Length: 262
Ligand SMILES: Cc1cc2nc3c(=O)[nH]c(=O)nc-3n(C[C@H](O)[C@H](O)[C@H](O)COP(=O)(O)OP(=O)(O)OC[C@H]3O[C@@H](n4cnc5c(N)ncnc54)[C@H](O)[C@@H]3O)c2cc1C
Image 1: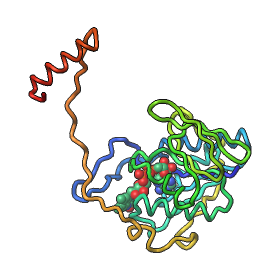
Image 2 (image 1 turned 90 degrees about the vertical axis):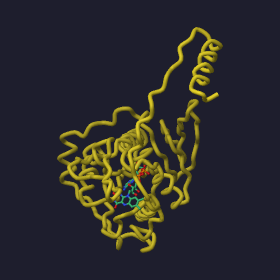
Image 3 (image 1 turned 60 degrees about the vertical axis):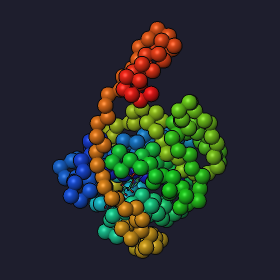
Image 4 (image 1 turned 120 degrees about the vertical axis):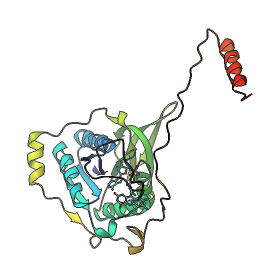
């Protein structure tokens, strides 16, 4: 099975700070890591390869330093890595990002399964995976916790609030994975890291893929960010304790009328 994993390099923090003047993320001084959900995606791909055979390729769109993230995936055991990097890709919103990545995946030829993380911990939109599937016109399943490969299809467990759905999809398909797909992705080995350092990572620019000039970078980004801010802290909630639901309801009504809400 030919598997492609989309990997994003992100700042190593969940406390992303915003520059109030420019409304952009402050990235200076923050080390970069592989987006944690994308490590789960890499682990899921490697497990499928180990069970059913095939090849795993990771692809990232980003600045030249994103090669470090790809090297880490090579050290985990993936076979190939490709970086899509060009000034023309800069300023991409999720639509332009997914268009560019879809063009990169198309260039690879036969691909059976594309795995993305559920979301990136910096942008957090969870849009890129589903958008890639739309650009490629292939089926998609999001929030996947488990993937089983069948002969020419996949069977996945999709998590939702009340449990799991079991979904079968024809291939090629795209899935986005959540953490419970594998709680602890494997660590890179020393042997893997040495191999990764020797491996050449091709860099595809705007000239290597079929993208429309008006569909990439800032030009291809219809999203306009008006303001980014950290939401103010909400007041702490209160849990009403009572022996019975009836008693709890009375206590709740008393509190609501005291606050002049009812
Ligand atoms: C107007 C505008 C301009 C922007 N300009 C820039 C900019 O100049 N520089 C910048 O860094 N960001 C920029 N961004 C943010 C950028 O659009 C998003 O970071 C990017 O599109 C991914 O979205 P996300 O982080 O929400 O990923 P999500 O949709 O949450 O990611 C889901 C999954 O998609 C895959 N994925 C996401 N992004 C990539 C990627 N780049 N490569 C490979 N796989 C990926 C991963 O598997 C990831 O787990 C801009 C956004 C807007 C709206």
